Image (cartoon, rainbow, N blue to C red; front, top):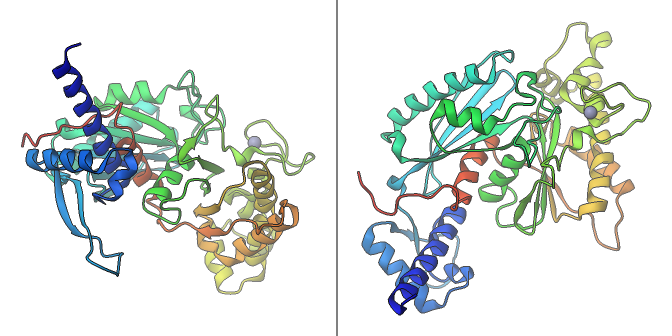
Length: 394
Ligand SMILES: [Zn+2]
């Protein structure tokens, strides 16, 4: 290789590192960009080059610093492209369009029948994506990728959706292949809890942390693990299926075929089931939480029992992984202290301390869009499989 080629490939590699950091972390000061492992003069020259090309722009001072002259931040130009987040959930598909500057431009949701085939649900999704792109002024060609969240594990080697998925028509389906065919866009697929963990690390309660566990409560209970700053999915892609850990060996049979899984004791269905005798009609989990906040003793009791059961699973998880923070999100998070206090107590009784305090358990900071914005963020983090244009071609 001749010297000019080497220099040019080195320049490309440096540019990729700076762009990758801005995609993953949003606008940063030139000083913070030194974290990517380049010298100050190289960062300066790469940033100058990207500013000249219009790939990055200066986005004003960092207002979180209150001493000295605030540094000017540089960030990617939002008009260069967008990512689309799609959350396929029980009864609903949520969507979000986010630009490469990490700005959420638009979100939407559409109700769907859980018995739909995957292709039927994706056709509906495709039509909503077109409508949302029209609403934000972007073309399909400017979509760098679509992140799809599924309510269940994705087998890592085969890409097939595992049997623990709460949407049965999707079990055994390669969602990535089917989605790429129907949507005609580059696709990434991961499970809801993993993507919600990415959202909380990118924008929420775990911002900037490296070792966290995110608990996502939806139809089932799942966990997303961020270890050393990276999502941990395991050899088969099933890491974090905490809802299927055994809490009661002699308990009820779970959808997965196991007995006494956490889901059979603490998922919304199990919680509302407990109130059939006392409250007559079947309540929704939102009703149970709202009644509990109004002081209903039975509703408070079933939520605190659920918290205790989840705490047992959390203690076992903590003893193995030692995260610095546990973020609790999803539809049970609205119960707040009624559920989280018994969870903490139950966890503290079983967790090893090693003289240290066990990690804080906090409610997630992002609302019911946490999974879908995480799906959009996951595409931004993967600059290898989802490259973006470096010049604005209009
Ligand atoms: Zn199970």
